[in-house]
Length: 59
Image 1 (cartoon, helix red, strand yellow):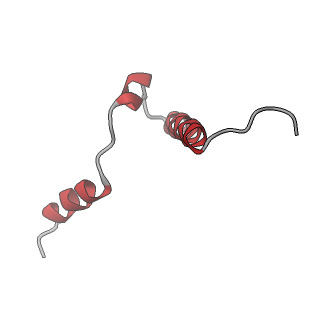
Image 2 (tube, rainbow, N blue to C red):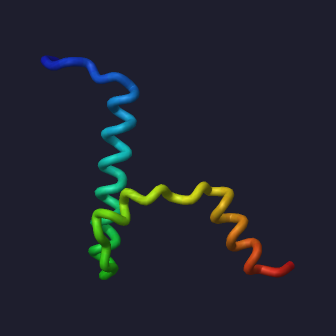
């Protein structure tokens, strides 16, 4: 196999970029209007999202 060996950091960076691109493409396929600038915004943490929806549901 010819070529250089990639580092873990390079692989993670590549897959993060591809994952974002695929997500935007899937939103466009579903009919959402998506701009590339939206992909630069940091996503909320998992716990932040859970807390947001838990606050809406009063148990």
